[in-house]
Image 1: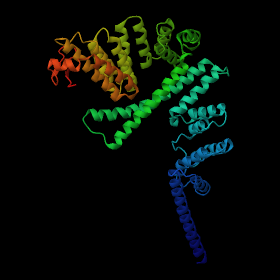
Image 2: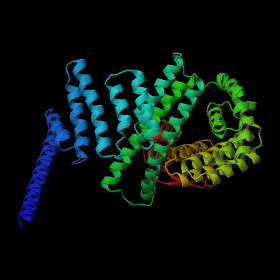
Image 3: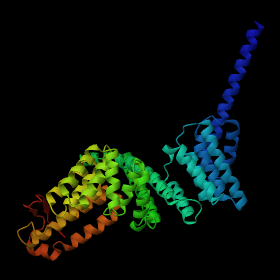
Image 4: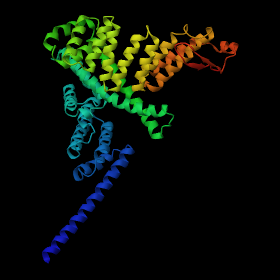
Length: 453
């Protein structure tokens, strides 16, 4: 009986201790959160207690704790004090991963950024942390700034002759570009779903509208990083440098699919596709694996050979093989561009195909605007109606900017130039056609309402 009573007392005592600990941890988290939101550095003191007494209690210890440490970094008055708290932040990231593994926070990546942003540690340390994060926690390497810093360091090391070869720079560029593609695809696919809903006449909820705005903001950031990376590597990727570089490496790599694919992509992107080495690489790639990428590159080769029929066959093959809607849309856009001067109906058809698989593919709307803007002499019964085509072209520019924030500036300027070329306010008044609908009974087959300016 005594034994049972003793066990009961121990269990009861343990329960009360656990309850008291839970209550204390909850209160400490609440106080830390309140302090952090108020920008009060006292939040760090509560974090210290939580790290000691409640490290596994709740993940918010680390999400709000990160902000608490950053406040201490911000308020530091000496370089030594600042570095102390930066190092403590790195330690907190490790603790987060230790007590809450698979948290998806990207803490390994954040460690490298923390050093870089606070000018702490060496460039080598920053690079090693980012390199480790990219290789071991790829899925959570999502910050555009981290991608840029990671690439910039290796480029600078190459320029400074620190043992980084040109091929390593290209490989890193391709690796990071692939990651950018993945992040942009995820965001743009989500945006496409919201655009499809809007086009169906449904109103987005407040939450969806905010999410759409956030997606557009993130896509713009990723686009800027991509442009900056392109500018950094531009001097290294001129045709004068690329062609002999790939000529030299072809024999050794002619059965290396990844090398061939990346070489073909770079030569194509940099406009070096007229050189025979591009044909050799593309044909070797297709022979090795007739994939979507390989078919696309052979399509480019046939364009250079002025064999439109074969180019179209390869491009359509690529489009059918691609499962990625962004890549599929890019192929359709390439075909549309190919037909833009010779067959406007075909060009528009493929531009619309691009939009059917990728509603946010704004470049396709711009291409249609260009097709319409260059057709004023093909449509309309008089000069007023012919120039009215510019209003229709401007509307397509508006659509381009609305669905794709990365080209909003270009779309806006192009739309303005079209509207400036359309009939003026005086001409509208003199024609008496304000508010009337003009139908373009030519290949365009659309109409426009004359604005009341």
